[in-house]
Every structure is written in structure tokens, then in C-alpha cells.
Length: 449
Image 1 (cartoon, rainbow, N blue to C red):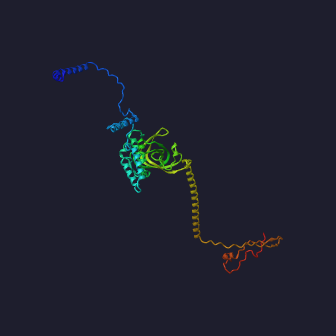
Image 2: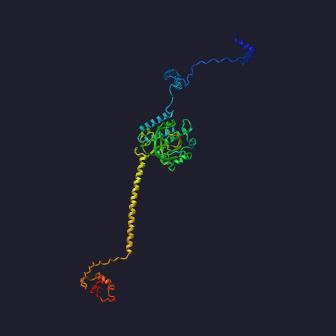
Image 3: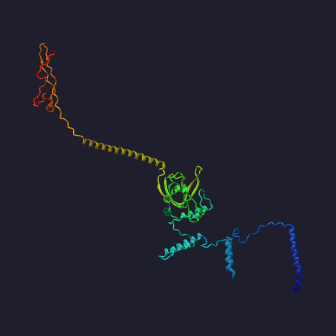
């Protein structure tokens, strides 16, 4: 049939063709509603997508040869080579990361640039070029410039997420806040914490009212009982924090519950041999300045749950250290001995002082009494007495010799006679000065009847 005949016969068979198509569609619809659909054929495993990034790993050597060969084709060679390069990245044959793609590459590039600029700069401009490179590195997010001597308060939105009496779990919001606070403490110097810390808050304040003082910088002091080293979280590790140190500090004035301080730097002057000890026997008194975070619940050796104030700081400061053999018990005994000796010395001094004081007052009183009494005049010493003469015997008519009876007399001295002149004078009281004779002088002894 020629083209002219086909074109002439097409209009005559058009309605019949349309009816045939409609009838076929109706038959298919009716038959599809009556007959059940055929069972699906099992799918056979076949080749996956040509450049699927998760399953396909291209060989970098093969793709390199292909790129080299396609680059030699006329006119489209460079485009073919570029297409193979990007196809190799898609097939995980090689990365196409530039020097500024990720943070670590940017840091390496910026540090190398700063060093080379400082070496190759003209004299006098090295410092200016270095500062300019540091500033440009901050703009390119190679690093972040922070003044570590400035204290930064915690945002209020962070504090609302923290809950007391709960442990840290990976993946929750509180752990993320904890990581950010650790990073902030790492980039805050000890001097900045010490200047901003409140010294009027005690253990009772933060323990009884944790919500009121959450996030506040506080100052604590006590004995270091234990210190351990831990790995930081991934967020803190990426920010530059190398290690974390957990220090247990006992406030000696408040019971047996300690502080738990998480530190970002090892204390200066403290031996690292203490890391492996379960309890530090040596008396080491320290101080810590940092953020009060929460009340952290833990279980002691008896299995009892205890809540301890948990804080985050930069480091701790050594205040006092004693010999390991000088424990608290021996120190207490030594203090008691010193107190006993001081008490004995004080008592002896008091006794000596009171004795001196009373003797001095007695002497003063005795002198005042003697000053008021009249002077006592002693009499002159008496003349020793003279013995009376013995009387001569007298003859009587009876022939018996009897001694003359003579009364004993006392011979007084001249002074005594003068004093008693009136009494020893004659009965007439005359003061003629004549000596009275004794009454028995010249008298004859009378014989016995």
C-alpha cells in the first residue's frame, strides 16, 4: 500500500480502531476484577546502583588510570577527567576535602601560616603579621579567641536543665550542659575563679538550697581524700580538654559528707603518685574555686545513697601539707599534750603570783600596824639577888643553942629603891632619905615556948 492509500484509508478505519481499544480496556477491567492477580515473581539479586556511596568503593588506581585516559581525548578530555574525579569521590575512592573543609585542617593551615609569616616577615612587622593571622583565623573559625582571666557566668537556660540527685548519662541534655561547663572552666584561669568566687557560702548553704546557688562560683577548703583521672566527653575532647580530675575534698568542719570537684588541670605542686591511691593518708589541705553544679548522688561503701555537692573548676590550690605518718590522731594527742603542759605551767605561774601577792600585802599590813602602835621601852636589867647572912647561934638558959630567927629579905638596887621610895619609906611618909632598918635587925630571937 502506498502512502497515499494509507492516508486515504485511515479515516475509514478510525472508528473501528477506537472501538477495539475501548473493548480491550473493558475486557481487561472485567477480567481483572474476576480473575485473581498472578503471584509476584521472586526478585533476583542484581547489581546495585552504579555509584552508591554506601556500598560501592571504587579503586583509586583504576579511576586514576581512567581519568588519565579520558583527559587525552580531544576537546572533551578535561571535562571527562573532572567527571571521573568527582565520580571517584562519590565512590569513596578519594576525598575532595580542601584545607578549609573541616576544623582540624583549618587549625593546621592557620598555625602553619602564622609560623611561616613570623619567620619570613620583615624585621619589625612580625608581631603585626602574627596578630593579623590570629584575627583572620578567628574569622575563619580556625580557633576562638578567649580571655582566660575573665570570669563568665553560666547562661540561665543551662541551669534550668540541671537536676539534683541524678547521675550523668550519655545523650541527655544535662550531659551536654555538663560538657559545656567543663569547656568553660577549662578556658577560665584559676585567678579569674578566685576573684569571682563567693567565700561567704558554706557547706550548709549549697547542700540545703542547691537551686538557689546553682551556677554560682564558690570557694571551698578541706582535706584532699582522693583524686582520680578520667577521660572527658567527646564535646570537651574536641574543644581541647585533655583530661579531667575528680577530687574528693572533706570539709573538716561539717560532718562526713565530702565535696566532689571536677577539675580540668592537674594541680601545681601535687605529686601524680596520688592518682593510684584509694585514700590519701597524707594530710593535704586544699582549696577549690569553681561553679557549683548540683547535688550528686552516689553510694558509699555501706551501700547507702549519699548526696554530695558537685562543682566544676579549673584546678585546686595546696594550702597545707603534713607528713604521711603524722595522722590526725597523733596530731590530736600532741595537741592535748601541749594543752596539758600549758595548763600545768599556767597553774604554777598562778600559784607563784598569788604567793608573792599575798606576802606583799601581809608585809604592808604589818608595817601599817606597827606604825600605829606606841614605842615599847624595855626596863633596865635587875641586879642579881644577894644571899641573906647566916644568923649566929644564941645560948639560952636551957643550954640549947638556937640560931636567931631572921626573916629573909631582898636587897634591891638603887634604881628599884628610887622607884619604890614612897612605898619603902617610913610609915610617916617622910622623904628624909634615911634608910629604914629591917624589922628584925638587932632583935633577939625568941625561944620557943
